[in-house]
Every structure is written in structure tokens, then in C-alpha cells.
Image (cartoon, rainbow, N blue to C red; front, side, top):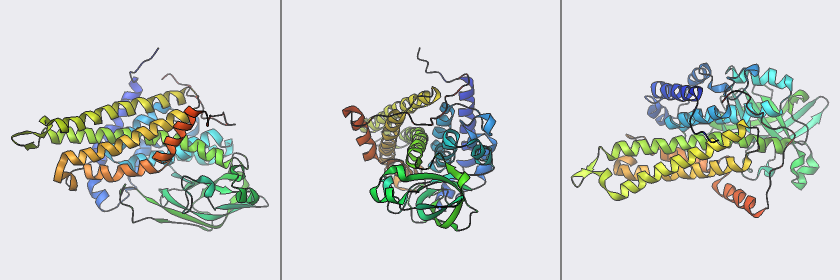
Length: 402
């Protein structure tokens, strides 16, 4: 039986995050965005709310909530600003949930527990200067020497590169397979900021998500203990794709929040601004744009909720999550463009938030699988060229009462 009602715990979380964002971030976000400032003081606040441990079981320091809760928080955070949702995407989605599924018990105790408690911040390192959508194009290598791996390479476009304490890093551990671009030659590692030879920096030329930290890190013969190998040697590519399933879920839910933010800002402006003697909301083409935003919002929300339900059931959801990410991010780009149009000249001004929405929305159409990659994936499913096979490790089903 289908039930579209949220439970009391879900509604409480939704309202708590909404109230916190409106109180602590919304009044300052324009200035943070203008000055390209990542406010680190928000991290302990988010930790205190349990957001940095969402969907991580209590036994590993998390909030013990289900995956729907992670989606709700992502939507509410991006309603305020994309930079807030990005924190959940890389810390919880890409890193913590991947360690939950693939990490050893020792790795969970050493890294997942403090991360879920918000005592340490985590990120993810796959993208490189010469490798984005083509993950097999990475050049980072991991050479086995005794009981350690020596990592050399550079990662870029890394969210919280200058903030995170721990990174889930992907590298070629088999150089012969690297030459053949055979993904079974990749492995995954936990790299700490404090490891000798690790350095990072911030990218300053981006034009969106300006209140977030985005950068790069380099590894110059960084020695990583064998115990920090995640999964088995050669499982790195599978782990990277698994992590993207979780990150894409938060991106989909977050983009849904951005559509709602564009809708609400447009409705408020359309009932305040007058042209030709009437509110601009009376004009049919303005109504058309606002109606499209509502349609896109409701559809996007249903898509990510479906993915969250599948996660709760412990079922593979690569196809459904990819569709949710593709649709909602494209919808957010459309909504932001229309919101600027509805605001007219004021939409081109920093006085109103829609310009920031427009700059922020584009990133999600590109990262964690471009619009084009997701189109190809969905077509391949329909044509029978692509199927999802169970991996050795899967995200554990939610065992609570939601």
C-alpha cells in the first residue's frame, strides 16, 4: 500500500533543518556568497543537529535515521543555499555511507564514528585535471611497498578540499591494467590530511556555489597504511560508482529544494511587482513559468523519494537515483532561469536571491554524472545495454520503523 505521508520524525527533522537554515544562514548567505566565504562555524552547528551523521546507524556514531531523512535534509539545506547541501553530499553521501557499506570494522571505528559525530569532516577524491566523467582516465597511482601504499597524483574540483580531515581517494594499484584502462586495476584508500606529502588548495575562479569550499589536493608519495585500503585491491572502481549512487541521491533532493526556492521567490515577486497596472502574476506567460516550477518540484520530489524508499528497502537503485538526479538538476536550471526572467532587471541584481540560484544550479548539472551521461545511462537501461548487478557490498537496509 502506498503512503505519501511523512512520519512524525521526518516532519520534525524537516522543520528543524528549515528553522535552523532560516535563522542561522539565510540572513547572512548573501554576504558569504559575495565574499566567497566558507563559514566553518556552520559545521559544528550541523553536527549538533545530527546532520553530519544522517543515515548512519547509532552504533557508528550516527543519528540512526533512514535514507528519506537524508533526502529531506538535503532539500531543506539547498533551499537556503547549495553550499550547505554540498556538505551533506560529500561528507555523508560520498564518504560516510560508502565506509558504512565497504569499510572494515576497524575503519568504521577509526573514521566513520568521528565523522558521523562531526568531530572529523570527510570528502571524496575521484576527479582529476584530465578525468571527470571518464573515471578510467585518472592518473593517480598507488604503489605497494611492504605494508603500505605510496600514492602520487592530483585531484581537482574537490568539495571541502581545504576543510576535510579525511578523503576517500581512488588510484591505480595495477599499472599494467592502467595501460589497458581496465577498471579492475583501481583501488580505494582513506587518506588523512596529516599524512606527509599531502597538500591542498582552494579554487578561486569558480562562479557558482561561492559560499562553499571547492579546491584541489596533491599527493607527493603519500604513504598510506595497508589498513586504509577500502574493500579489496582492485575494487576501487566499483566503490567509486557505489559512492556516486549515494552522492547523486543528495544532489537530486537538493536540486528539488532549489526548484522550490525559485518557485517561492518567483511567487513572492510576481504578487508584489506591477506592470501595466496589474501584478505581473496576472500575465499568462509568468503564470506558465511558475506553473512549470510547481510541476518540476512535485515530480522531482517524487523521484528522489522513490530512490530513498528503495534505499530503505536495501534494493539497488542506480537507475532510479540517476533518473532523479538528471531530472531534478535540469529542472533546477530551468527554474532558476525562469526565476531570473520573472524578476526582470532585478533578477540580474544581487539584491534578489534568484541570481545566486542561477549561478549555483549549473554545477549539479555537471558533477556526479553530467546531464549527457545520465541521458545515455537511461537509454542504455531501456535498450538492454546496461543492467545493474549486485556488488559484494550494498548499502544496508533501514531497520527502523519508518
